[in-house]
Length: 616
Image 1 (cartoon, one colour):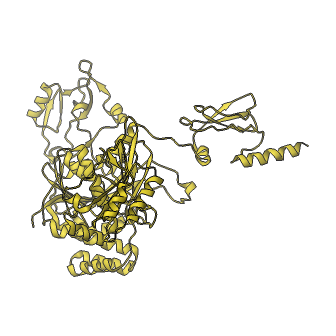
Image 2 (cartoon, helix red, strand yellow; image 1 turned 90 degrees about the horizontal axis):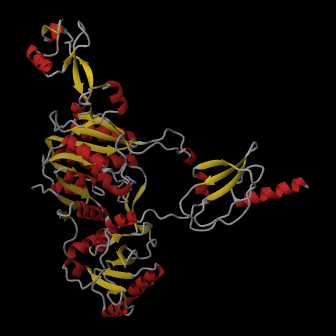
């Protein structure tokens, strides 16, 4: 078995590791596996206009259950007769056949394989959160050995936030855990440095040379411990001491002007320049890397920032080394490895992730064309995928024509739409095609009519029907009856088979369209699309209190005017101003009242009526 690099694998990483990755062939492993969070994670697409697209697809469900697969993995670990077997058996006796035990078992069997494929000088970084990090560390101690634990890194993944209103009754959780292990006592390591804090620079490097403007500090050069530590004793500048440097080295520093004496008889000290210092050696508390956002965001819920992966790869590998990510998601590890001239292997169990990675590499590394192993390459492979997982089949089929996956495992939620694509239609106008995929043998014209009806309901320009079986002539004539658009350039309803797409014999004509990455780039050019705020959002926005003397009156606001809401305080009249972007509809200013502050217009009206009755 020979390990091939710079390629993606579509499938379960356990199977890929066992059948395709050679022992002792990997220099660095980074894995960001599911956290056992009990959450569902979706890939959120954008339309070119900047709006959130209807195309959302569940990338994975982070919920684990004890069942036949977990039980088989548990037995497999026990049969290995490794230290991990004892730990997993002990955890099972403590936790029982629970969801947490299922998660730990499925992780343990994969960690055993990851240890096998690492070189003796290799390292592993496991990214997790406090949900199960303590259990995972025990398992890693058993597999790698306690002495091969290097450190626990804390990454501040987000800024502080207040969850009290959501009912949280504990400290806010803003950090992830990254467990760092090496396979042996000798591992690849490169020191990295971060910039000095400005306060430290101002306080420590407080001297500035007049002629050069260079900042420096004065350091002690006496030799602590004296002769017992091997420090030489001699006299310089009239001062006899044990010194850190040999006499020869000291003379060189004096000649270079690096040794200075404040006054006669004072102990000489050494000039150390700020611009010669590498910075602060990297510690295990990482609060300087922001989460993936802005231009970096691909809509992938668990996406990690590129800077985080670059740091790990630079510290624990060298150019030409092989980096493996068995849960590669949207491909941040692959992106970082390529940029740092490392070879790489990426594995993911969802076709959606594989397609995002391919689109990402096409944008940032246009010369890279990685192979993807595990995806269907012929009709038999397509049929097998359709039998095994119809959703993965549908999303793979949509990608064959450049479509984005859509829909999920909730029956009926997608209205038969399995993908969509966006394309330009003139200046600042965009078109959309919806995709329906059928993997069964029973096809009928009614399926074409259903797609046409959905296209009309969703106001899409085009509907594309992809089928595994051969369509009937009646289906083709039904599709043709819906005509074309853009002066006959493209059909309203098109039918194409998997066989035609695999053999590149399709006659399907499509307009130039965006992929999963470029569609977000197009959306960013237009900025965020603002929507009218709800009443709850208005009350949560920042407030600016302005004194007024005139009574506010109910009137209609202009479209570009900020929303005003009146409020009275017992001691003074104030006006509450809500500052937001351009308004998209007219809103009213509520009349100022002398008591209280209502949460709704209905409540305000009721209070006003009560006040009138009271005056009578």
